[in-house]
Amino acid sequence: MRALRMVDLVTQYEKLKPEIDRAVLGVMEAAAFINGPEVQSFQKELEGYMDVEHVIPCANGTDALQIAMMALDLQPGDEVITASFTYIATAEVIALLRLKPVLVEVDPHSFLIDPEAVRKAITPRTRAIVPVHLFGQCAPMDELLSIAHEHGLFVIEDTAQAIGCTHRGAEGARRAGTIGHIGCTSFFPSKNLGCFGDGGALFTRDAALADRIRRIANHGQSQRYYHDDIGVNSRLDSIQAAILRIKLRHLDTYTQARQAAAARYDAAFSGHSGIEIPARVHWSDHVFHQYTLKLTPGVRDGLQAHLNTLGIPSMVYYPVPVHLQKAYVQADAGDRFRNTEQLCAQVISLPMHTELDDEQLDFIIDSTLQYLNQSTPA
Ligand SMILES: *Cc1c(COP(=O)(O)O)cnc(C)c1O
Image 1 (spheres, rainbow, N blue to C red):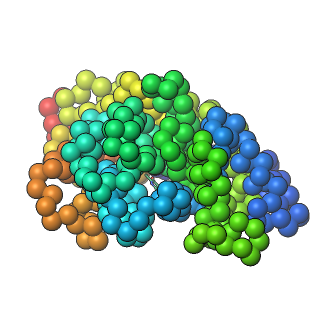
Image 2: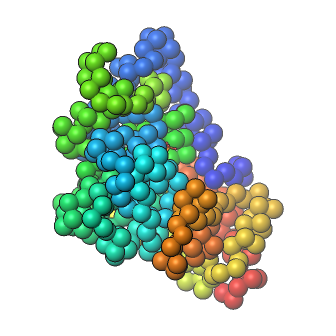
């Protein structure tokens, strides 16, 4: 059996090696490293795939979120609502810009931001909502958009974990990241569309906003050496773009491979009294950036140790919610985050990637069930 990894980028690369090596060498031979033709082509191809008017590539997903908030002209003290159960980057850029992160609860089954909690968190200073399409499934965008509309708020989608996912809502079928005012994604190597380093992009349908985003990502520059805005230096480099062009062509096949692995996990785990399989929401596909189980209290850490002794990697996304992180601790949290705190204690993510075969999946499944059946009643 091939070695188990949370994400098997080695095997994936082996299959694409001739194509990728040729593309990377091509960039080196042309020496067009920054904003070269590969970046332009990738932008166009991703616009086509996403069915969105404007893709603006940038250096990473965290920058994408920061640039989005700068482009919407959010000001110090403005409140931005996001989920406490997320990767830190979402809240980090809010705080970095001296905006106020207002953290809210998630649904205990889908792990997605709870629209009722968002509604309750709105104050006269609220300017934006940042839904996170966590683990590969869209947040409840129709409800969030109607709340945003009612209160005049911006919606910035964090779609770092959900590229390739489709949302089916009031506006019809749309790609995750093209539903709100701005979508932000990451091409970190382990994401569903990953490059061989750092990369990211922003999506918008609004031409004026796209211009402003493009300017801010490039030192606020309107033409060379003329700076209309305070900006940042955040570019996708040509080597990464060349790799992403190739991998974009495989993205739908990769998504299907993830969904097939998830279906095999589901079939084995559903109905087990100690395991809650990942809930599917009716308004979204699930592209399984992570396959995350919720276990009965008290067994997670033992299972993880057991899997580890068998050479099966697993991860806890996320062990500590944002509202309990030292830099972000919210003194008045009370029991507002009961679901989030339970999830942090009870979830485990199993290997999920594009290269899992049935032998590997069955070994992970059997080892998991073997442990849980001796520590919880089946
Ligand atoms: C990965 C990730 C980011 C940040 O992306 P980087 O490219 O690593 O900066 C932001 N939000 C979420 C939810 C992520 O998973």
